[in-house]
View 1 (tube, rainbow, N blue to C red):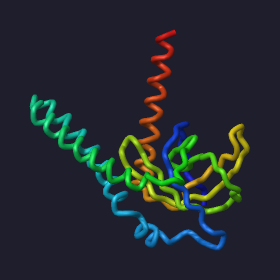
View 2 (cartoon, helix red, strand yellow; view 1 turned 90 degrees about the horizontal axis):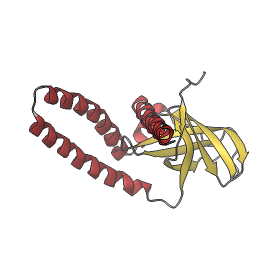
View 3 (cartoon, rainbow, N blue to C red; view 1 turned 135 degrees about the vertical axis):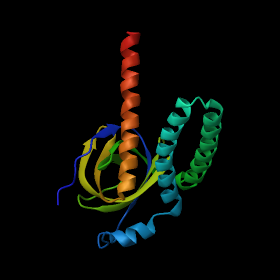
Length: 189
């Protein structure tokens, strides 16, 4: 089965990788869903609610209800701060790595151990915008030498579609930031 193609963006996301033993296999989708920490599922749901909040805020603005809209936005910010705090508890790990690029179908990361093509890993990606964490399984499809050592490219093998949507949103957000920065740099010249 062919993996769908998604664009990737160069950006450093904090991730955790737990390489599986050679004799371990991917869990079934049911078992995979059961493994996902509840906090990650909640963060995903919050992100989807944020999309609805943006639509509701636009409606409030149309009806000149700025005070209600501001109250609504402040409550949303408080919830997002709490969510960020809970997710940070998972991020505090001595084995955190940082991606060199990521997208909704794959990621690349500098590695400091020998990894075989086809090796499976349990991966947690910590997104900044939207504030969320994605839990998935990935397979190493490429290992390349770089000036800083080895870099592995991993394709997602088990991932919820809602989490893939979060990765698409995060990649688009990062791409928008990069384009905005290029525009500012061009204007400054």
